[in-house]
Amino acid sequence: MTLYRANPKHGVAWITGGSSGIGRALARDLASQGYA
Image (cartoon, rainbow, N blue to C red; front, side):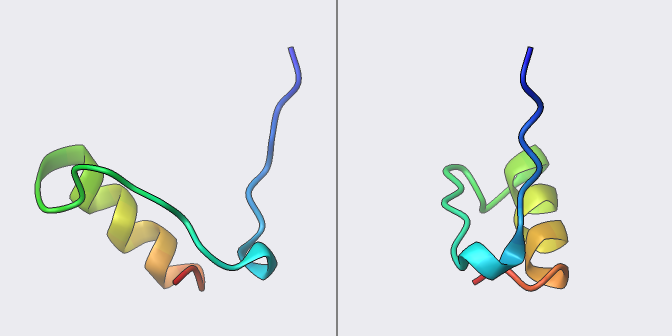
């Protein structure tokens, strides 16, 4: 299995369900890493 490592240099992370729960936590984490 190929493991994909995200890179904030690529720009934007698209997250659905980012207003609560796991989606919100993921959105905050990615934002702290430099994603828009």
